[in-house]
Image 1 (cartoon, rainbow, N blue to C red):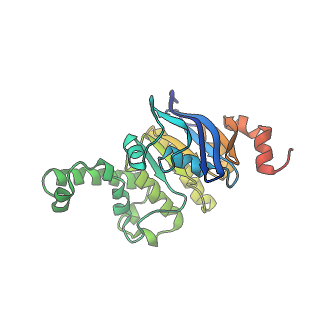
Image 2 (spheres, rainbow, N blue to C red):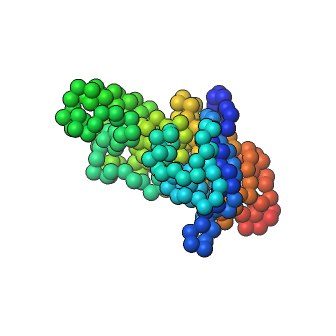
Image 3 (spheres, rainbow, N blue to C red):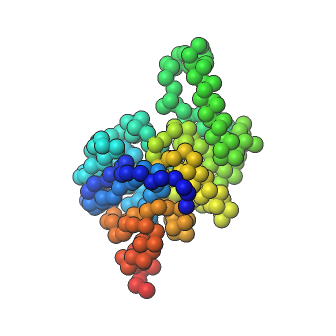
Length: 261
């Protein structure tokens, strides 16, 4: 594990319940996230992991419960407000602009940071030009950090899947988030690609001090890189603690293996 200092609770999820029609997606879920930690959310398919991320992200409005971020409690937030508070997210299904270059895709993540109006941006005048240069420098640093320099000008759609996932991570990093929400960052990857992605996640956490909330199916990965793990099953919380605690939790073993060992 890295040398970073894990701080106090920065994100507190309290008694979140979410239903679609009569179907309960989440029931009374509570957990917290500490500053600088890697916090994993795991569980079998249909456990409610993405729904939980969508509640934190402002995509879904839970019927009950509240989320507190750095002392500010909110029950109803939209995605834009959540992004402005310092949250960025990657998606399970890549939402990249396939025809655009790596550089331009990552640049879209800087939109929140752009202060000048669209007209000034379009004509690249004065402050807008200076801002564009500053934003490009930030994007170039991310490209170096993620080791994708040879692909700077390549349309993303032509790149291997593992590298596309890296671009998706880069776009989220371009927002300079305080909290990075990763929705299955290793899905569909081979072993080598997973190892690379693990290294980048640990480096983001270590070098930028970014707090990370991560959904992942690969239990080996989760146990290797997480500080704490919360386990969901059928929309309910069945475990919460260090990887070692969760690994030895009977309810968790039952949910994953379908039987007690």
